[in-house]
Image (cartoon, rainbow, N blue to C red; front, side, top):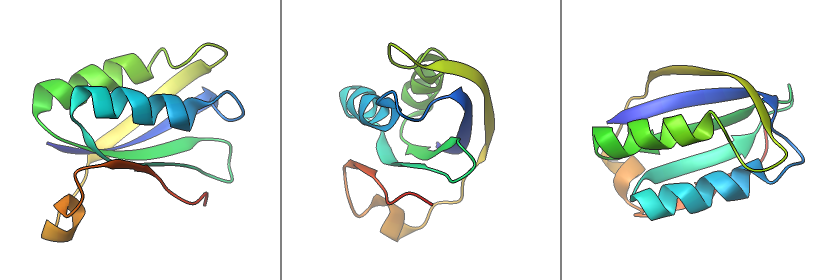
Length: 94
């Protein structure tokens, strides 16, 4: 399953990206996360459906200090290059 999510609320300046990376690695989910200039956090999650959905459920709570207002989600397209790394990275902010 490949899912693109955008998390809104108080999600920048609270360690959200680092927290999500840690949770993704623990769940065996690959992909990336980054801050966006509009104050949201964006991520692409790839992995077994149950692992991805579990991570989205955790993302609704976020780390201590975060206040998640909403998570927009849509299917993400995947290419072989997307799976070249078995990691979950923090991408450069947009």
